[in-house]
Image (cartoon, rainbow, N blue to C red; front, side):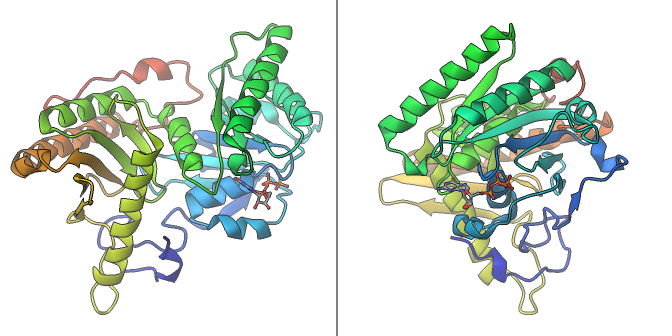
Length: 382
Ligand SMILES: Nc1nc2c(ncn2[C@@H]2O[C@H](COP(=O)(O)OP(=O)(O)OP(=O)(O)O)[C@@H](O)[C@H]2O)c(=O)[nH]1
């Protein structure tokens, strides 16, 4: 469900997420790469690379610009590097660079050293519906070059367009790609280069899930957030909790119990419902107001004794929980624990701001980023 295309930009009443216009606040400007680096070039980067028509632009548009998957059929081929500044959230503060299919590493105008040096994650997209031998060759060339320039990069392989494959075929394709890619690395004595593999499609939630995992690796405070979520759910009788970036529906953290796709989808759908209803009925007559603000909260009881509970945490983040109806009888306790949890999350951010290290900014290009990841649990926890 998606109604955001109909929503007019609204007056600012709540920071940057003042409304949910077409681009959900992620900014519509996409600049072709310039010769001289702009200040925003210092932001951590996620590169989208892969062969032509593998689906790179579609992924970017669907996840960050709310394009419906069917509309991607009409996307034109990218012929320049496009930089997309995902800076509406102070939490997920990075740039996505979408590359044209054929990047020529031997082209002297392509300064790959500069590009890889400031990169946090390199996502290589492989079209699983196509013959992937050429893509594997390209993957090897790309990651080995990038690794030599910056071994701190997280290398992520999206085995994409799996909506067209049967379950068995998916597993077999993943196994085969995994095996071949790692054999190539072993032959080149690059065993230390770690590739993570994801099965993705823009036609379901798998692309959001995969992107969530990619982004989480770039969030230095992740262990602290997970810790807070664990404490919150265990003290509140909650089964599963996600901390969502509301505009992209990427979850930036969850508790340490395993994530099952259905729970994640359910929570994503809840965000859609809340924002849609809020856009339609939550604004003032003159259209002013905000679809998501401090008051945003929702409780949905399902017919299988499950309760969904959503609350605003920061102007970009929402907590979405799944719990049993009987646990919800102690709503007062849950609300109180949430209050403490919210306060703790704000303290995590304040620490980040006072240290002048916005989340994500130190996550890349810095050899100490793994150490920063363990930067202290806030003083008051739930
Ligand atoms: N079935 C299916 N098709 C997809 C998926 N993702 C993208 N596509 C289709 O793949 C085609 C190519 O997508 P693009 O996003 O333009 O590919 P690209 O990698 O950016 O291509 P270049 O700009 O030429 O490098 C489009 O017709 C998309 O609709 C997917 O998950 N499943």
